[in-house]
Image (cartoon, rainbow, N blue to C red; front, top):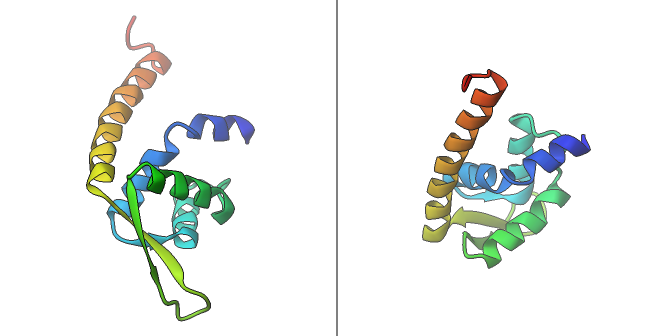
Length: 109
């Protein structure tokens, strides 16, 4: 599992931005969505430091809202800078994916 976590480290931000682009979301809900997409090693506790860093970097904004089940929740949404970062991530991801597939499939020979 450590190998896959290390591999994901560089792409997790892009995945988070992509999910948040769909609409406002709070940390636990984001962790559940990631798990639903097959990222089983990420918990709510793993997500919050990433969200905090991304917010400090100006990629996300947040607002506190009342919850029907407990304390207020912090909902995250993309900023304009976050939208731009997601666009750049998708370009980089597409290029990297193509290169990796070429190597794996020996398409360059």
